[in-house]
Amino acid sequence: MTSSPESGWAVPADADSPHEGGFRARMDITTDRGGPRYGEFSEEIRRLMDLARYACPTPEITDELIDQVRALNKRLEDVQIDEWRSPAGTRIDLPARGNITLPPYEISEGGPDGVVASVTFRPFHLGGNDAAHGGHVAVAFDDLGGMASALAVQGITRTAYLTVSYRSLTPLRTPLRMHTWVENLDGRKAFVKGTLHDGDRLCADLDALFIALKPGQP
Ligand SMILES: CCCCCCCCCCCCCC(=O)SCCNC(=O)CCNC(=O)[C@H](O)C(C)(C)COP(=O)(O)OP(=O)(O)OC[C@H]1O[C@@H](n2cnc3c(N)ncnc32)[C@H](O)[C@@H]1OP(=O)(O)O
Image (tube, rainbow, N blue to C red; front, side):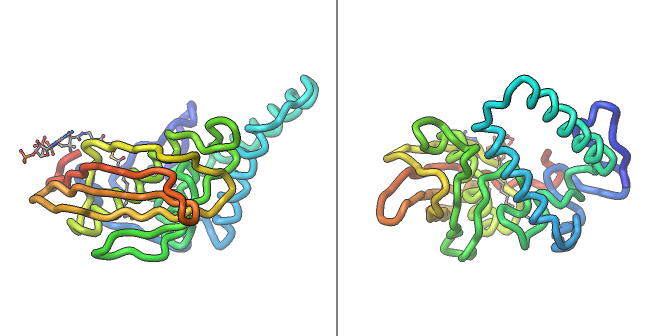
């Protein structure tokens, strides 16, 4: 296991984790990294973010919390690894592939007709007035649009542009339906559309271009 740098920032890949540009020489998609309770761990981190977002601690409680979070961070520093082998992003059995930085989603369909997922914006995704932040809506579209284009080109793609039109407020704490699909495939260019609905109500839609990476392209 790669040891953590002093700073605790991301760990670079080493010879045990080969990849070529944006491509992975070995697609290490797993369901066991981090152990059977890793999903529970991710959910507790999200809960921490939710609670921190709306917390107003006294100065004494802030002092106490700093010590506790520092102890937790110290524990996590001991188990740092590069992005290619971390459970976050590769645990396909967990919401949003176990990636705690994404709005949690669960995929119900994925194929030539695109990707359909249930996305729930958490309390910590607050933009204002109990609605989701537009940036977080764009993150969900980027990931699920990227997935629809990856399925269409059967490879890794990168976002060239991504335009989100916000049609009505996106609620927090509510399972929403996101659909992304490739409208037109032109060589390496996948033109992607998407919608986000709360029941019958359209919250936002997507117009994006993803480009299939060439072998070795970073
Ligand atoms: C665990 C397993 C999971 C698996 C699931 C994975 C899902 C993960 C999902 C995660 C998803 C997260 C995803 C993310 O967040 S990706 C992160 C955000 N995106 C980036 O950082 C991308 C930065 N940009 C680049 O790297 C390059 O510019 C790219 C790669 C995009 C193109 O540079 P490249 O040198 O390769 O190609 P090219 O320049 O010859 O262009 C090629 C063609 O495209 C046309 N073009 C280019 N740009 C634009 C534009 N802006 N508008 C209109 N057209 C544009 C261009 O005219 C040309 O057309 P044509 O002349 O051929 O007709």
